[in-house]
Length: 178
Image 1: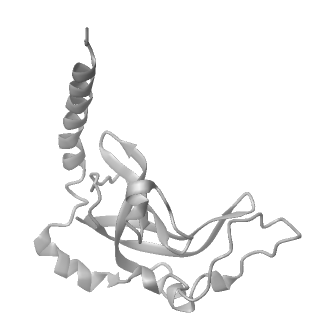
Image 2: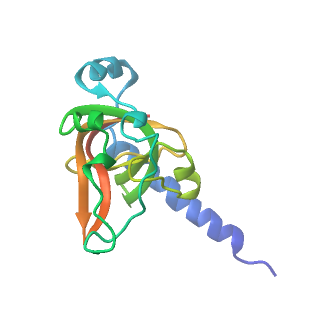
C-alpha cells in the first residue's frame, strides 16, 4: 500500500509556498520597479563580465600562495580596466547562485556570467563571477534561472584566505532588477 509520497510532496510544496510571501515582502525595498531602472542607470555605471575577464589568457588554478614551488598570482589576473571600477557604483547583469538563504530570501550569492552555474553549479574561473552580499539586512527573492541586474558597490582585488585566492571581485548589493 502506497502511503506517503504524495503527502510528503504536498507538505514540502506547501512549506515552500508559505515562504514566497515572506521573501517578496522582505525584498520590496531591494527590487527595482521597472519605472525606476532608467534613473538607477544614471547613478550606476553599467559594466559587463567581459570587462572583468582576460579573454586571451587562461587563469592559473587555485593554489597555495605559501608554496615555494608555485608563484603567487600577479595583479595581471585583473585587467587594468577592471581596476578602475574599484569601490564605484556599478550595475552588472548575471545569474544568481544562492549561497546564504533563509525564509526571507537570499542574502549572499554568486553572480555568474554563465547560466550553467545556475543549472549545474559549475562556477567558472575567478574572473567570471562576483561574490555579492546584500547591504544591511536586505534579501532578494529566488530568481530561478532568469538573469538579474545587481546595483551596488564593487570591490576589485584578490581576496586571500589561508593562502588561497578566494575571489577577485566582491560586491555590496544595494538593489536588484529581475
